[in-house]
Length: 192
Image (tube, rainbow, N blue to C red):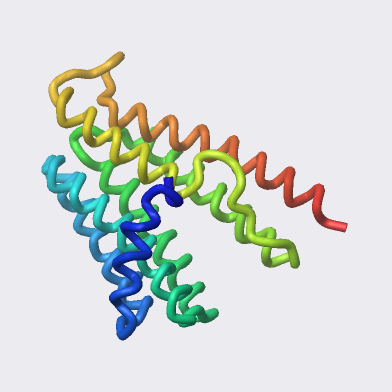
């Protein structure tokens, strides 16, 4: 989807030459915090807008950095660090909301972090950072945005006693754990 939406990101990035990409990264993180608060209080439409905006800014920071040769190790570190904080805050907000489930949320956070950890740990041992498998960060954000839309239209409806948000947390957790094993296998086989 990124290639199809590239004009929305690259077109805007080309007009932001004087902007520090790290500032955009921080804005994305702050929007993720606002998302968690709004989801907790059940403001689903606002949550949808906030998550969409956070995701957009998360893509925009890298586009600006690449376009104007502002890429740096500090910027890469900050981007990935705040992505992890954002991941936690987004999933935590969903978990503790009226629609969430504590146990499913713990699984979602564990699956997300283990998948991300394996991807970056491969780089720590001299391999390339691994982004392979499903779900990646962009996949998770799109899934959550779809879940928000479904949750808006099914607010009073549960399936086996759980809201769609809870089921999504479980799905993200289990698929994240499976992806962590997949990435670990890729990394381990690449180590010589």
